[in-house]
Amino acid sequence: LSIKLSICVGSNDTVKWEKGVTYAEGQNLARLLMEAPANHITPTAFANTIEEKLAPHGDRVSVVKRSKAWMEEQQMGAFLSVTRGSDEPPVFLELHYNGLPGGNQPPLLLVGKGVTFDSGGISLKPSASMDAMRADMGGAATVCASIVTAAALKLPVNIIGLTPLCENMPSGKATKPGDVVTAKNGKTIQVDNTDAEGRLILADALCYGHVFNPRAIVNVATLTGAMDVALGSAATGVFTNSDWLWEKLQKASVVTGDRVWRMPLFEHYTRQVTDSQLADLNNIGKYSRSGGACTAAAFLKEFVTSTHWAHLDIAGVMSNKDEVPYLRKGMSGRPTRTLVEFAAQLGHNS
Image (tube, rainbow, N blue to C red; front, side, top):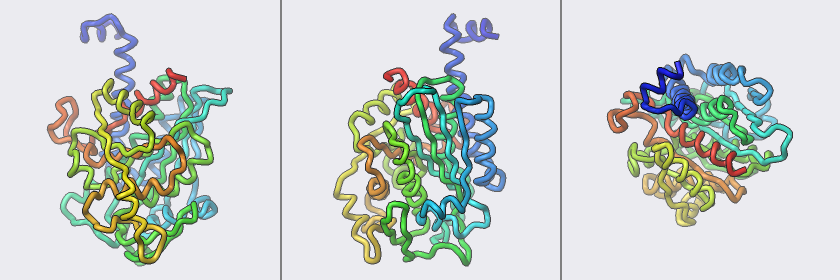
């Protein structure tokens, strides 16, 4: 088979070919998860699928599926507020890949938004195209697929993946606009729009992730329609407090061709989310639609103390029509290959 593949690509370098196939399989796993109907990929089903995919990699990986009771013990009030309207139990999926077993190398922390269906909650979305919100767990899909791929490639790097998984649904128990909730770090949040839920579940996951003393934190999320308006499908928007981390991500994206573009993380936007009538923060910017992707990033920054953190808003690259010729129409699984390449380069530099 290797000889035949070499002839097909006009090269004798089968190692690079096989590496490329593994990268593609990782992206296809993310696509599969994102494309599947929401009644098939529930939080529980998502977690079980990833556990099955990691099972062949033995003692290099561990999978922990944490329950609602654990979230309550952790005082993840922001995450739990999103889960309240759904009958599907939430899952906090925690993955550990030990590419440097026995060492003390700080891990790369990847955090993915895992809303397996986003109706908008009480702030209900328009019915047109709501079916596409089965892919609102694209951040979790790309993060988990990246770790599965890293394990398959035996990358020499330690990675921890955190994916809060839930549905955002309207019901008599659902969070109401104007409610105030308390995040894990004690900050209070006025929830003026229940459709700005991704930042709420990420807030608690980011707070928890700091206990691992990570080398760098990268969170990935289909977070804002504003990101799609800003960049479309050309590139993933990156908001970061670290020039070093930006350079690493940008270099990885050049290698894969799945591009990233740096966006502003000004205090100008922070003031728009900290100006809240009832709480420390508001989950939407003061001027609502203005700079929506930027105010969402500023909100997340309030839950980060690490000096190397990046937020990847992948709303614009979530799906593919005909913009990227080598991708089929539908959910794209982007930027899985860029995340894997980033981890690979981080491991090589170690």
